[in-house]
Amino acid sequence: MNTSEQTLQQIDRFINKIAQKYPKGCDENSVLTDIHILVNQDSGEMKAFNDDQEEITRCVVEQWIDNQDEQFYDEVTNVLRKSLHGKCDVVDHLGLLKPYSFVLEDDDEETIAELYVADDDTIIIGGDLMTNLDEELDQFFNNLIKE
Image (cartoon, rainbow, N blue to C red; front, side):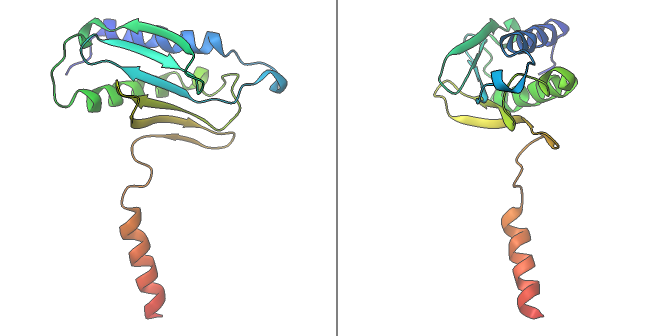
């Protein structure tokens, strides 16, 4: 799926609306929450919620309406990660207590991917943070046992 310029602009506005809801302020006004993004493959609707399931914003991405691509959520994950990274100057300074994350969920509110994690000193962007962890730990323990 090639992402159109219009789609990128809609995502950009979507992120800006989230930032408007949680403007950078003094620490005592900060909120403890993550941002949950739900994308509907049939309607193309994208919604953002906080941890209390209160809606922050929504929009319809026309390019995503009735998208039957089996890789739809993989594509959306990549597009949203790039957009969040491109707006890191805004996303890193929301009025939220750190660490906070942006999480992609499906219609059933099942987590598909962690899109972006912001912490005071660490920002993690990317896919599965624990990829190959089991193999690396097994190798580490085997090396310890051999010694």
